[in-house]
Length: 263
Image: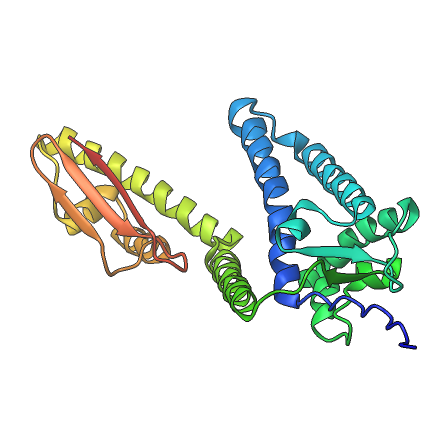
């Protein structure tokens, strides 16, 4: 008499598939958050409500995760052929679903350390999996082609995220950059006033910086101020009888170009 074989457990979800599912679930909520923020700031002109907007969308995301956990998979997981279960293969139930959803929020700070944890856990379990005692498995096995495609998409998405974060954190204007730009624009306004004073006296604008320095009334202070707010490279002064244009570069990290003209 043949012995009945116990059904084999479904394979654990690959980390690349889980990452793609995470993005598919998160991106619509990020779009909704930034869209609402744009409406609040630029249309309603009420930037003070950004905290309420953040809390509302975070609560909506947690509720979405709770419902998805109760159903066995969120939309993102279903798209990637994954499901979330207890280690014995049974469904989570409401309590575990809530704990797992709240665990998402706990894992997001510190560069998403709670999710990165899954890279090193033998069962690819993130913090929210450990908190709720859950695992993510494949609903059905994937072919090698599907696995390779998903891995390529996941690595491409990671590369895009790294580049965007690098640009934001490394090249985003710092308070010092903004202050340098402010000073540069104020300096242009002062130069414009000197140009007007020069024209009132001579009947024309000047393209000579030395003449502007003399017209300022204090050549030494003029030179010191120019060196403190403008990059000496890239300064351009052009003028005629009834028009002028001044271009310069601020002393921020990007050496941003600023300009003023009258035509």
